[in-house]
Image 1 (tube, rainbow, N blue to C red):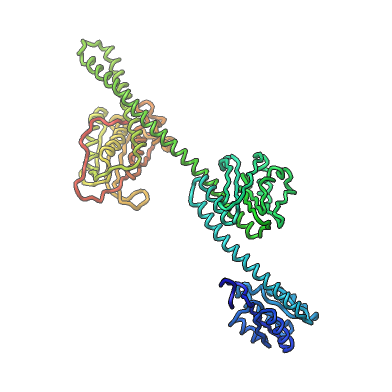
Image 2 (cartoon, rainbow, N blue to C red; image 1 turned 30 degrees about the horizontal axis):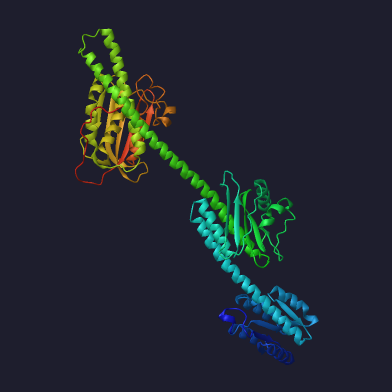
Length: 576
């Protein structure tokens, strides 16, 4: 079958297959159609017709309804379903008495019929009309397939970016190209979902462009909401005009946007509309097929969803950037304040020591007692400044922790030794278990020293006279039961922590309700939690009022069998 320009479709000389048992009808149809420029094959039985259709599918089948059994008609239906477009090209030849068969034939995909007796002109005209309709539908299907593929690519482009402005640019250009429009414009209203937009696009080949309508936001919202509620699109008819009969309030302001063929669709999501999009074609008037309208609604739906998500992501990115700026400003402020406070505090504590040592002369006992109070509070303020600077550094350097194998038993022994004077002053017995072993965890030695100093110092501080603090180190798995970890517990026989206070214990500046009689900043445990988290570890606490408290810290074990490191003594570590 040779087609025009080598494209699939109706041949230059269409092929016709005739099925009729009556030889006179076969000969008549063959002669008439051959004379009209068609290639005809005429067969006498349904079986021969089906066999020929399978071997050489024709452009159109003419079959005598009286010669087709129900089984034969069903076979034709199944075969026509497998042949592209064949369901539009089956014609029945029937007498008046055989019209019920024609009705059944329509149910099976027959597209037309001829009534006996046959006339040459009627046969040729009806066959040509059926072929033309078939070709028109084929072209429509092919056009819709191409349009669907273009719309799919436009939707992919929209989803490829989070920038609302870029989405609109891609959508306008893509919709314009897909629908062969000369102009596309979009307008969205400024609300919490999307930003205000008034944009348009024109093709390079457009001879003229029409002015974008400039109705009020109320008019835009009214029309968009009406269309969105109905789930409809305003389209031009064969005369090229859009019928605004149901929307008289927008007829005047939209008049300037009318082309020879236009579609106007709402943008929205959920129950709310927030904009309009319109495409305009100049040239010849035309109406729009349902498939084209559906594809426009599909791409505008993707655009609306993308604009909402993009606006949300953009807003979140702006918030994150602002938070980063604020965090940096906070860090700079804390560092500046720390420097500005440390300098006078160093001077204050230095002169206090000189005065108390008698370098400026003998100090009366009452004055010495007052100066010692000043000294303790200056030390407390210095500790608070140091804690705040530590927290600031932790916030700013939340990632990129440099680790090395740290010998935990050695580190714990060193911390316990540093706390001996405070423990002996209260006759608190510090007991170690596992401190003579060798167990390495990956971490920053100085940070881990501060973690355990804070925990163990608190244990000594909140344990009454003649109490006990027990420090234990061993190995196991983390709280999820998967990663090998070092496990350190610090248990005391102190005052305990009320159950209601436990959930907030690691919050900044939080102190247990029964701890206010003992000095502290409320930052020590927050520092512990932050540093342990940075080490991909876990810290937990169990406590009973009047019985004592147990802190448990897990840290990932080191896989390095080389030298383990512990810090040199850094002097006093701030503890709350």
